[in-house]
Length: 113
Image (cartoon, rainbow, N blue to C red; front, side, top):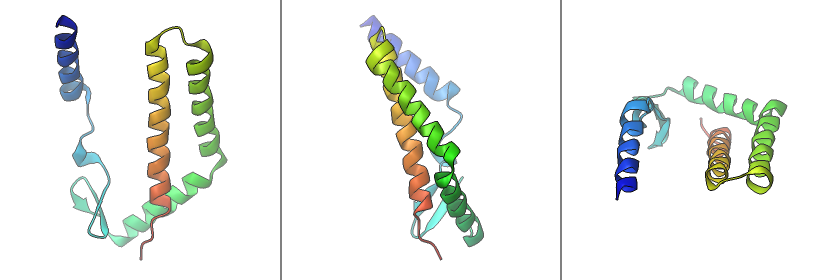
């Protein structure tokens, strides 16, 4: 019971005190346009984001960083972890890497005017 309460309190504190990014700060697509911070982006801004995502996706640095994170995480998971917390944090790093890569890929492959 005490661990549950401690986890609930920690979750509340992290969510409301340390989380500076909210749903409002995330790029969203709706009805054929993109919104950022509640404002619809114009065609020039959308095309700029798409072009930047394409450039990022094709750079060697991007590929090297993704592979380095994956390799480091896999090393931690399969070879050097000494606790379940280390395994969980390495898996979280893999998950974050996947989320970022999917976002860049989605933006790079967008079709717009």
